[in-house]
Image (cartoon, rainbow, N blue to C red; front, side, top):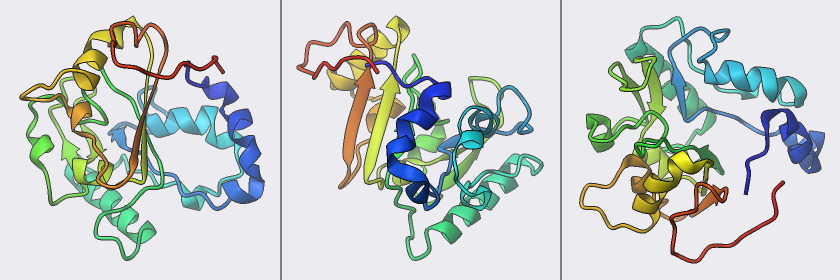
Length: 209
């Protein structure tokens, strides 16, 4: 199943209605430490293709402060999340939408990186990302695994090999995306045919959006 293109996302969420959208709080699973008008800014991309078309108050969109050093940016983002999720020691998102890289990374959690062992911080800085830009801010595994629903979206033949590893192989040293296993929530994968071509496990097929 193909993901909804950014320009069609407002239409896809329209059934929720403007009143429902106005109650949403949006955050980002990870972000590059670049200005919001930079081509690599996740928030900048969403602001252009999605948020500008939806009636979600800007005050309910939680972002990093890209002007801070990466360690302070992570602390600041964690503080904002704690304010939004008051009463939760670990923020419990209703929905997280994640991607996966050909190496199995998700968010800015990369294979064999020390951040995979982080259990205390809900947001962590990374200054040595193997994928540029090197400085980023990311949610940690405890937050990902506390979510009520996690959806992975992966498309293209370049993801086929790693998806087979994640969904079928029982590896001694799993890639980061395989470590996302919500404790009490649901985990779903949305793949196109190219990404799913190596899978032998049963899966549902749906018409494209």
